[in-house]
Picture (cartoon, rainbow, N blue to C red):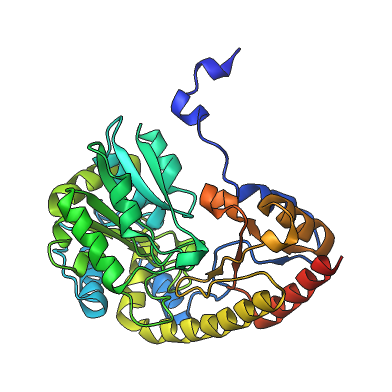
Length: 386
């Protein structure tokens, strides 16, 4: 039986994640230092875990409303007001999702029809382009580079827009580069979005992990809230990856459609995680500060070490990734990563996995201990010496 005749052509056209190959290579290997997985090495703070445990003890094990518990949606609104000067109606403008990834999927599916263009600054996380392809979109890459700190150029954005352009993805703070979008650049991007009547999908999952200045959401700029969907979550800022919880905030007309898709595809996000998330939002500011300070120290250690080894690295301003150039090695990104893993037992991710503009770089996650980062740098030095 030829199953290819039954599988959707849109799915057949999607390539496997470039990250997954290196996770598969890790299998069965001992003494490997992994700077590959984008996951905090912290355990979810105890008071947040305890809130989840207490919800189970009280028997809160049933479905919640499709959009999430009202208690959590109110907490999300209060958090957005307090941290980013944004206010959303809990009943109409917030939906709780299974991680930030589902929120991205819902937004793209709610907005995009076959032939619409999705504008995507790259390098960028691996999910945006495949989700766009599954909806029949044309995903238009807007390259960014180390020379400009991997910021999105307003001029490049303007040049990429056509009459079919509908959605602009803003993945800042950025995975994998650590770039942020701020100040005049952010304001100019907002003006372009309004000029061309674009909807903006602002993925702000790393908003709390900003090391230089304060994170500013594009939705807070004049005239932008009505055309922006903000995606947030708990995985990165509260070390809650396994709880699988995120959210989207935006115009009620769009959120209504996103919630409708969510209703049929998912029903509701995990109940226990929702009760834990309320505790995180209401009493987790100190946890964020502690983790951010530790990440910042690791950031400085890793960037200094990479530059010392001749792997030029633009200092990341957000998230927990460094994106050094490995061009001086004479290897492609994939060759560099394979050689480093097989010879020295250090796992990093090829930059090409995050779009063609990422080639010539590798992603190093510094959500690992200083001891591991120091040893990883030593092993990289050994490989380069060879």
